[in-house]
Length: 426
Image (cartoon, rainbow, N blue to C red):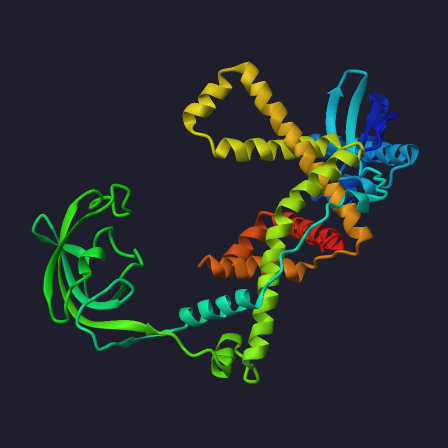
């Protein structure tokens, strides 16, 4: 057995097993099998070794070789001064030749690299945080007040832009009633652009109790393909006109918006100011995070575990390929030069991702940045709810596909970058 430390993050183990040693180990394994297996006609533990070899030959040989490799592997780790917990990913068998006289095996190891990061604070760019004015806070509160405003019937006869027209309508295409093209007492805000283009504009000027025919053309890209691009006629009756009644900005509104019984306008302003400061901070941090990442990748050098980079490169290739059209994939695979360039770009991108992961892991320890598993689950859960998905099913999908570690690392990275940028924020 020989070992080679290729660099700080990669090692190679070469093992040669004489077949006589394998045969001797096979005898030991066969004797062990003879005491464990059940064979009709023999008492347990009394099965002849010759019969066991005949029945379980392949299994015996595999276990014998595995035991010998394990022993050599453990010795190799000691010789390389590598702790098992420092190995990242699975050891890769790059060679396994079962010859007539000996068996040759090569195992490639990926090792967690030693990373020396000093004076990293010098890499952090300065960030100037925009100030939040009283006017900003008042404007945001007015916006929230408008969002929770209740539509009420107004004493006016003619529809204008911004009004809510309560209508009955029936739609026709080619003289036939449309499927799902009818509604009663439908509140439509004029100018919201929620209906087919042109529909809302033709309601402007209608009077209460007036009936009108409105003609529109469905967009070519309309989701219901059977009516996309077709002209339709809607018979519309205006029932009444409503307008949003914006509530007064007072303690009652504060209680409603903050969902707190003891809320006041002042506490509302304080909360809104914090919210706007966080938004402005996130906006100011976004480009600086990219700048900081580039500086960290450029300034910090260390060896990368090749097997991990290659595995990440496969993911990058698959992701890029999933976004390509069939003809683009065909063009790429038929041009060897372009295909090699594509693979090299993917490997370069993968190397940066792997490098950043190790840097983030090391800096997170220095800055005491941690994300626990419950935080990860909560983020996935609420993101699923926000997207209108079944949160439980989404969580199950992430667990089954082992995606939780990647989400956790992403959260650690975001939190770490924000922590570092906070040091230079002013």
